[in-house]
Image 1 (cartoon, rainbow, N blue to C red):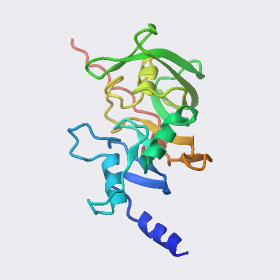
Image 2 (cartoon, rainbow, N blue to C red):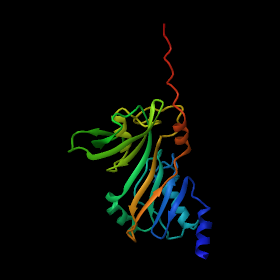
Image 3 (spheres, rainbow, N blue to C red):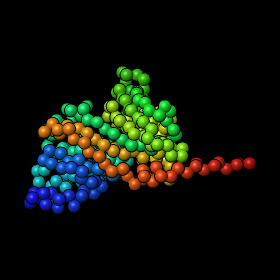
Length: 245
């Protein structure tokens, strides 16, 4: 009982930008907010999920040997489930078995995907400007597969459930943009829209085998309020062009 009280008390102090969904001696699973990097790039001033959790496990003691290890990443503007390891052994075990992990996302896109369900496949390449694009040349890119299904249409947009069959950088964003259904708010691969302040992409659910027990675990991140608002009302029509005559 004392241990349970201590754990509940600790959970009150959530790291900035993160909600802890689960923690034990081997892993910490969190719900990351949009706008927060997973790990630093050297220009972020230490404001990352990794840095916040590192401080959390050290409990403010910089001499502590406690550490956090990155297992996988989410884009800065993507919210949702992230798992971190608390030991290097746990990290390596998770990464070695990561192909068995199941990842489910939600995304609002521009347009109505047709067909309403399918798999997008291409070879993804990252150029020197860190922009990812598709190719049919398997010698240059990495094979990438994204499964999607339309859940709901709202005005000129659609809500999709997405299952990643591979996990490449910007994979979902590039594949949907390739098909002419860019994610709402994606200023990099689509277009920035005033009525949406964030990228409408959320890592809803993550399943993986625990690195110590081997038990299958599934974690779900609550759907962001912005998604509920978008699902409740049609998107505004784009502004009409003025007659230049």
